[in-house]
Length: 125
Image (cartoon, rainbow, N blue to C red; front, side, top):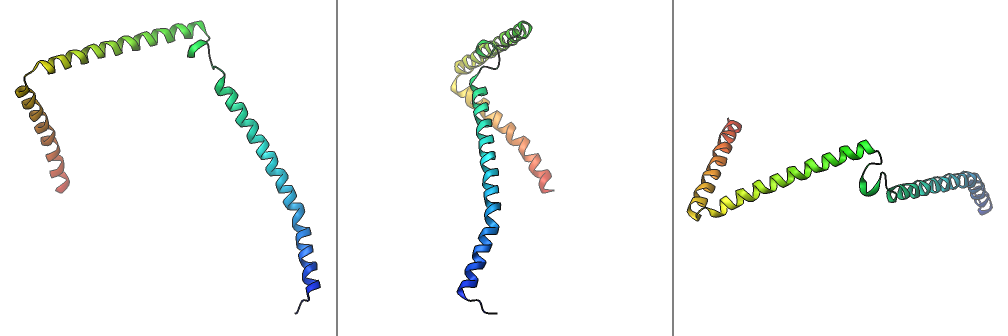
């Protein structure tokens, strides 16, 4: 079945005419989705900028603020206690002679290696 140029042109026109309404509809849907996503993004950005609670991250409720204050104080005291203990340990370590430090490090490494060796032997068996 041979087609001349005129028939092919008519078929192309009919195909485009059939596709265009669907493509226009799809573009409208995509534009609506783009606008919806832009609005969502703007709302998220506004929400991120506005504080969620009272000043400086503190809760707006008085009871919650009091609980938060206690929690923060306990955390600070725990961290300070840990820092003092670490400073004491470091001072004790720095006061030891180099020979003692080397011996303790060697003993620690030997202990680590001793723990690894039985595990390796179990895997090989």
